[in-house]
Length: 331
Image (cartoon, rainbow, N blue to C red; front, side, top):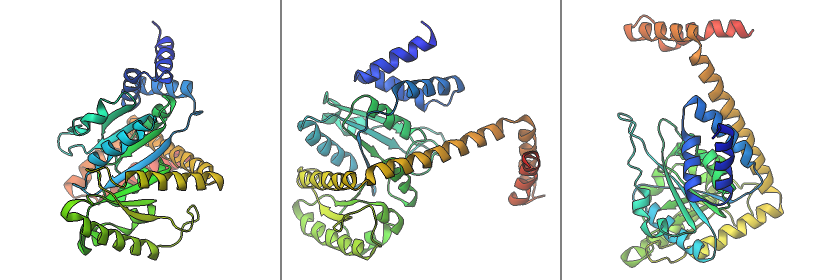
Protein backbone atom coordinates (compact mmCIF):
# COMPACT_ATOMS: atom_id res chain seq x y z
CA UNK A 1 0.00 0.00 0.00
CA UNK A 2 1.49 3.34 -1.01
CA UNK A 3 1.89 6.33 1.26
CA UNK A 4 -0.79 8.21 -0.69
CA UNK A 5 -3.26 5.35 -0.25
CA UNK A 6 -2.44 5.21 3.49
CA UNK A 7 -3.17 8.91 3.90
CA UNK A 8 -6.33 8.64 1.81
CA UNK A 9 -7.56 5.70 3.87
CA UNK A 10 -6.73 7.49 7.13
CA UNK A 11 -8.56 10.61 5.96
CA UNK A 12 -11.58 8.52 5.04
CA UNK A 13 -11.55 6.87 8.47
CA UNK A 14 -11.36 10.23 10.25
CA UNK A 15 -14.20 11.66 8.17
CA UNK A 16 -16.23 8.54 8.89
CA UNK A 17 -15.96 9.15 12.62
CA UNK A 18 -13.69 6.14 13.29
CA UNK A 19 -12.20 6.91 16.71
CA UNK A 20 -9.25 4.57 16.14
CA UNK A 21 -8.43 6.38 12.89
CA UNK A 22 -8.73 9.72 14.70
CA UNK A 23 -6.30 8.54 17.39
CA UNK A 24 -3.82 7.43 14.72
CA UNK A 25 -4.20 10.75 12.92
CA UNK A 26 -3.48 12.76 16.09
CA UNK A 27 -0.42 10.60 16.77
CA UNK A 28 0.76 11.39 13.26
CA UNK A 29 0.36 15.18 13.57
CA UNK A 30 2.05 15.16 16.99
CA UNK A 31 5.13 13.40 15.63
CA UNK A 32 8.26 15.46 15.06
CA UNK A 33 9.73 13.16 12.42
CA UNK A 34 10.23 14.86 9.05
CA UNK A 35 8.45 12.11 7.08
CA UNK A 36 5.56 12.16 9.54
CA UNK A 37 5.26 15.93 9.25
CA UNK A 38 5.00 15.55 5.48
CA UNK A 39 2.29 12.91 5.87
CA UNK A 40 0.48 15.05 8.45
CA UNK A 41 0.42 17.98 6.04
CA UNK A 42 -1.03 15.73 3.35
CA UNK A 43 -3.67 14.43 5.75
CA UNK A 44 -4.76 17.89 6.92
CA UNK A 45 -4.90 19.09 3.31
CA UNK A 46 -7.05 16.10 2.33
CA UNK A 47 -9.46 16.72 5.19
CA UNK A 48 -9.90 20.43 4.45
CA UNK A 49 -11.52 22.99 6.76
CA UNK A 50 -15.22 22.71 5.90
CA UNK A 51 -16.50 21.39 9.24
CA UNK A 52 -16.49 23.65 12.30
CA UNK A 53 -17.07 22.51 15.85
CA UNK A 54 -17.57 24.72 18.89
CA UNK A 55 -14.11 24.96 20.44
CA UNK A 56 -14.10 25.56 24.18
CA UNK A 57 -10.80 26.29 25.92
CA UNK A 58 -10.75 25.38 29.60
CA UNK A 59 -8.21 26.34 32.24
CA UNK A 60 -8.22 26.36 36.01
CA UNK A 61 -6.19 26.31 39.17
CA UNK A 62 -4.74 22.95 40.37
CA UNK A 63 -7.31 20.90 42.28
CA UNK A 64 -10.25 22.93 41.00
CA UNK A 65 -11.89 19.84 39.50
CA UNK A 66 -11.26 20.28 35.77
CA UNK A 67 -11.54 16.55 35.05
CA UNK A 68 -14.74 16.23 37.11
CA UNK A 69 -16.21 19.24 35.31
CA UNK A 70 -15.27 17.93 31.85
CA UNK A 71 -16.78 14.53 32.59
CA UNK A 72 -20.05 15.94 33.97
CA UNK A 73 -20.29 18.60 31.28
CA UNK A 74 -19.36 16.16 28.52
CA UNK A 75 -21.93 13.60 29.66
CA UNK A 76 -24.59 16.31 29.71
CA UNK A 77 -23.73 17.26 26.12
CA UNK A 78 -23.66 13.66 24.85
CA UNK A 79 -27.01 13.20 26.58
CA UNK A 80 -28.29 15.96 24.28
CA UNK A 81 -27.10 13.95 21.29
CA UNK A 82 -23.90 15.93 20.73
CA UNK A 83 -20.53 14.38 19.94
CA UNK A 84 -17.80 15.64 22.26
CA UNK A 85 -14.02 15.48 21.88
CA UNK A 86 -11.68 16.26 24.79
CA UNK A 87 -8.07 17.24 24.15
CA UNK A 88 -6.35 17.22 27.52
CA UNK A 89 -2.79 18.53 27.79
CA UNK A 90 -0.67 17.03 30.57
CA UNK A 91 2.51 18.72 31.83
CA UNK A 92 5.76 17.08 30.76
CA UNK A 93 8.66 16.59 33.11
CA UNK A 94 11.42 19.11 32.47
CA UNK A 95 13.93 16.42 33.50
CA UNK A 96 12.71 13.24 31.75
CA UNK A 97 10.28 14.69 29.21
CA UNK A 98 7.63 12.16 30.26
CA UNK A 99 3.96 12.74 31.09
CA UNK A 100 1.47 10.73 33.12
CA UNK A 101 -1.40 11.18 30.62
CA UNK A 102 -3.96 10.01 33.15
CA UNK A 103 -6.99 11.98 31.99
CA UNK A 104 -8.87 8.95 30.66
CA UNK A 105 -8.68 7.27 34.06
CA UNK A 106 -10.07 10.42 35.71
CA UNK A 107 -12.99 10.54 33.24
CA UNK A 108 -13.97 6.89 33.30
CA UNK A 109 -17.66 7.31 32.40
CA UNK A 110 -17.05 9.81 29.62
CA UNK A 111 -14.24 7.66 28.20
CA UNK A 112 -16.75 4.82 27.73
CA UNK A 113 -19.37 7.02 26.07
CA UNK A 114 -19.60 6.15 22.34
CA UNK A 115 -20.26 9.81 21.51
CA UNK A 116 -17.13 11.03 23.29
CA UNK A 117 -13.42 10.94 22.47
CA UNK A 118 -10.67 11.73 24.99
CA UNK A 119 -7.10 12.31 23.91
CA UNK A 120 -4.38 13.21 26.45
CA UNK A 121 -1.23 14.78 24.99
CA UNK A 122 2.09 15.79 26.58
CA UNK A 123 2.90 19.50 26.64
CA UNK A 124 6.58 18.67 25.97
CA UNK A 125 8.54 21.97 25.81
CA UNK A 126 5.59 23.99 24.53
CA UNK A 127 4.54 26.98 26.61
CA UNK A 128 1.03 28.37 26.73
CA UNK A 129 -0.72 25.46 28.44
CA UNK A 130 -1.30 23.54 25.19
CA UNK A 131 0.72 21.04 23.20
CA UNK A 132 2.50 22.23 20.07
CA UNK A 133 0.10 20.40 17.76
CA UNK A 134 -3.11 20.96 19.74
CA UNK A 135 -4.47 23.21 16.97
CA UNK A 136 -4.01 20.47 14.38
CA UNK A 137 -5.62 17.93 16.73
CA UNK A 138 -8.63 20.27 17.00
CA UNK A 139 -8.87 20.39 13.19
CA UNK A 140 -8.85 16.58 13.08
CA UNK A 141 -11.66 16.39 15.65
CA UNK A 142 -13.69 18.84 13.58
CA UNK A 143 -13.11 16.75 10.45
CA UNK A 144 -14.30 13.70 12.40
CA UNK A 145 -17.66 15.40 12.92
CA UNK A 146 -17.52 16.28 16.61
CA UNK A 147 -19.90 19.04 17.65
CA UNK A 148 -17.90 20.31 20.64
CA UNK A 149 -14.15 20.18 21.24
CA UNK A 150 -12.99 20.82 24.81
CA UNK A 151 -9.34 21.88 25.07
CA UNK A 152 -8.10 21.42 28.64
CA UNK A 153 -4.86 23.26 29.37
CA UNK A 154 -2.04 22.25 31.71
CA UNK A 155 -3.11 24.63 34.48
CA UNK A 156 -3.79 28.26 35.22
CA UNK A 157 -1.09 30.87 34.62
CA UNK A 158 -0.25 33.90 32.51
CA UNK A 159 0.84 31.76 29.55
CA UNK A 160 -2.45 29.86 29.48
CA UNK A 161 -3.93 32.60 27.30
CA UNK A 162 -2.48 30.87 24.20
CA UNK A 163 -5.48 28.52 24.25
CA UNK A 164 -7.69 31.51 23.43
CA UNK A 165 -5.98 31.58 20.02
CA UNK A 166 -7.57 28.24 19.10
CA UNK A 167 -10.89 28.41 20.96
CA UNK A 168 -14.24 30.08 20.29
CA UNK A 169 -14.92 30.33 24.02
CA UNK A 170 -12.48 30.49 26.91
CA UNK A 171 -13.74 29.20 30.27
CA UNK A 172 -11.83 29.77 33.51
CA UNK A 173 -12.67 27.27 36.26
CA UNK A 174 -12.00 28.33 39.85
CA UNK A 175 -12.61 26.98 43.33
CA UNK A 176 -14.22 28.75 46.30
CA UNK A 177 -11.52 30.81 48.02
CA UNK A 178 -10.80 34.13 49.61
CA UNK A 179 -8.88 37.17 48.48
CA UNK A 180 -5.59 35.30 48.08
CA UNK A 181 -7.09 33.24 45.28
CA UNK A 182 -8.44 36.32 43.53
CA UNK A 183 -4.99 37.89 43.90
CA UNK A 184 -3.33 34.78 42.44
CA UNK A 185 -5.30 34.67 39.22
CA UNK A 186 -3.55 37.08 36.91
CA UNK A 187 -5.31 39.87 35.09
CA UNK A 188 -4.09 38.55 31.72
CA UNK A 189 -6.04 35.32 31.92
CA UNK A 190 -9.11 37.03 33.41
CA UNK A 191 -9.19 39.42 30.46
CA UNK A 192 -9.30 36.43 28.10
CA UNK A 193 -12.05 34.53 29.94
CA UNK A 194 -15.58 34.58 28.52
CA UNK A 195 -17.01 32.73 31.51
CA UNK A 196 -15.65 32.24 35.00
CA UNK A 197 -17.18 29.16 36.62
CA UNK A 198 -16.73 28.83 40.38
CA UNK A 199 -16.82 25.07 40.99
CA UNK A 200 -17.60 23.07 44.14
CA UNK A 201 -20.72 25.10 44.92
CA UNK A 202 -22.12 22.24 47.02
CA UNK A 203 -22.26 21.18 50.65
CA UNK A 204 -20.41 23.37 53.15
CA UNK A 205 -18.57 25.18 50.36
CA UNK A 206 -21.70 26.50 48.67
CA UNK A 207 -21.95 29.80 50.62
CA UNK A 208 -18.26 30.50 50.04
CA UNK A 209 -18.65 29.67 46.34
CA UNK A 210 -21.45 32.23 46.07
CA UNK A 211 -19.28 34.88 47.76
CA UNK A 212 -16.31 34.03 45.53
CA UNK A 213 -18.51 34.28 42.44
CA UNK A 214 -19.64 37.73 43.56
CA UNK A 215 -15.99 38.77 44.04
CA UNK A 216 -15.12 37.74 40.49
CA UNK A 217 -18.24 39.34 39.06
CA UNK A 218 -17.12 42.59 40.66
CA UNK A 219 -13.58 42.17 39.32
CA UNK A 220 -14.90 41.57 35.81
CA UNK A 221 -16.83 44.84 35.90
CA UNK A 222 -13.54 46.68 36.44
CA UNK A 223 -12.01 45.26 33.27
CA UNK A 224 -12.20 47.18 30.02
CA UNK A 225 -15.23 46.33 27.86
CA UNK A 226 -14.45 44.01 24.95
CA UNK A 227 -15.87 44.67 21.49
CA UNK A 228 -16.57 40.98 20.88
CA UNK A 229 -18.95 40.72 23.85
CA UNK A 230 -22.58 41.69 24.50
CA UNK A 231 -23.19 43.99 27.45
CA UNK A 232 -23.51 41.27 30.11
CA UNK A 233 -20.31 39.37 29.21
CA UNK A 234 -17.90 38.21 30.50
CA UNK A 235 -19.69 36.87 33.56
CA UNK A 236 -19.14 34.63 36.58
CA UNK A 237 -21.38 31.69 37.57
CA UNK A 238 -21.40 29.03 40.28
CA UNK A 239 -21.51 25.32 39.42
CA UNK A 240 -21.11 21.97 41.07
CA UNK A 241 -19.45 19.49 38.73
CA UNK A 242 -19.81 16.77 41.38
CA UNK A 243 -23.58 17.17 41.61
CA UNK A 244 -24.01 18.36 37.98
CA UNK A 245 -25.66 21.58 39.14
CA UNK A 246 -25.42 24.78 37.13
CA UNK A 247 -24.01 23.01 34.07
CA UNK A 248 -27.12 23.56 31.96
CA UNK A 249 -27.09 27.26 32.84
CA UNK A 250 -23.41 27.47 31.89
CA UNK A 251 -24.13 25.77 28.56
CA UNK A 252 -27.05 28.10 27.88
CA UNK A 253 -24.78 31.10 28.48
CA UNK A 254 -22.16 29.65 26.12
CA UNK A 255 -24.78 29.16 23.40
CA UNK A 256 -26.12 32.69 23.93
CA UNK A 257 -22.66 34.19 23.56
CA UNK A 258 -21.81 32.13 20.46
CA UNK A 259 -25.14 33.00 18.84
CA UNK A 260 -24.51 36.70 19.47
CA UNK A 261 -20.99 36.48 18.04
CA UNK A 262 -22.22 34.67 14.93
CA UNK A 263 -24.95 37.24 14.35
CA UNK A 264 -22.48 40.13 14.71
CA UNK A 265 -19.73 38.58 12.57
CA UNK A 266 -17.39 38.12 15.55
CA UNK A 267 -17.14 34.33 15.03
CA UNK A 268 -15.77 34.70 11.50
CA UNK A 269 -13.37 37.56 12.27
CA UNK A 270 -12.02 35.69 15.32
CA UNK A 271 -11.40 32.53 13.31
CA UNK A 272 -9.66 34.62 10.64
CA UNK A 273 -7.45 36.31 13.23
CA UNK A 274 -6.59 32.95 14.78
CA UNK A 275 -5.60 31.62 11.36
CA UNK A 276 -3.23 34.56 10.92
CA UNK A 277 -1.73 34.00 14.36
CA UNK A 278 -0.98 30.34 13.70
CA UNK A 279 0.42 31.10 10.25
CA UNK A 280 2.86 33.49 11.93
CA UNK A 281 3.77 30.86 14.54
CA UNK A 282 4.32 28.13 11.95
CA UNK A 283 6.55 30.38 9.85
CA UNK A 284 8.59 31.38 12.91
CA UNK A 285 8.99 27.76 14.03
CA UNK A 286 9.89 26.70 10.49
CA UNK A 287 12.51 29.42 10.12
CA UNK A 288 14.03 28.48 13.47
CA UNK A 289 14.19 24.82 12.43
CA UNK A 290 15.88 25.77 9.13
CA UNK A 291 18.36 27.96 11.00
CA UNK A 292 19.30 25.23 13.47
CA UNK A 293 19.62 22.63 10.71
CA UNK A 294 22.21 24.74 8.87
CA UNK A 295 25.69 23.15 9.47
CA UNK A 296 27.51 26.49 9.63
CA UNK A 297 24.98 27.86 12.11
CA UNK A 298 25.25 24.70 14.19
CA UNK A 299 29.04 25.16 14.44
CA UNK A 300 28.66 28.81 15.41
CA UNK A 301 26.05 27.81 17.97
CA UNK A 302 28.37 25.22 19.53
CA UNK A 303 31.21 27.77 19.71
CA UNK A 304 28.87 30.36 21.23
CA UNK A 305 27.69 27.85 23.83
CA UNK A 306 31.30 27.16 24.80
CA UNK A 307 32.07 30.89 25.09
CA UNK A 308 29.04 31.48 27.33
CA UNK A 309 29.78 28.50 29.58
CA UNK A 310 33.42 29.61 29.93
CA UNK A 311 32.38 33.15 30.77
CA UNK A 312 34.13 34.66 27.76
CA UNK A 313 30.94 36.19 26.36
CA UNK A 314 27.53 37.16 27.61
CA UNK A 315 24.56 35.30 26.12
CA UNK A 316 23.54 38.45 24.22
CA UNK A 317 26.99 38.92 22.68
CA UNK A 318 27.27 35.23 21.83
CA UNK A 319 23.85 35.29 20.16
CA UNK A 320 25.00 38.19 17.98
CA UNK A 321 27.94 36.10 16.73
CA UNK A 322 25.51 33.33 15.75
CA UNK A 323 22.95 35.56 14.05
CA UNK A 324 25.30 38.12 12.49
CA UNK A 325 26.34 36.04 9.43
CA UNK A 326 22.70 35.04 8.84
CA UNK A 327 21.65 38.70 8.96
CA UNK A 328 24.40 39.61 6.50
CA UNK A 329 23.31 36.80 4.17
CA UNK A 330 19.70 38.00 4.14
CA UNK A 331 20.63 41.64 3.58
